[in-house]
Amino acid sequence: MLPECQLLGTLGCHLCEVAEGLLMPFVEHGLLVELVDIAEREEWVEAYGLRIPVLRRCDNGAELDWPFGPEQVAHFLR
Image (cartoon, one colour):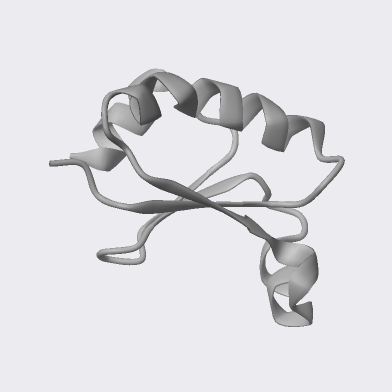
């Protein structure tokens, strides 16, 4: 079973859109991904502003910073 994840990004972020597209095959196979806009909280902007997009596992808090590809995501989800 795949862990639930969050994709941290913000509106207008081209790389975030690319990351969303990259995650779609995983979503089609059961991955649940919540899109989180870091602009909603100042501490998120400070922590992630230069790192987005970031894929974060909800179960253990592990984070995968951009750039990542399908192979890195598959390994990250194991």
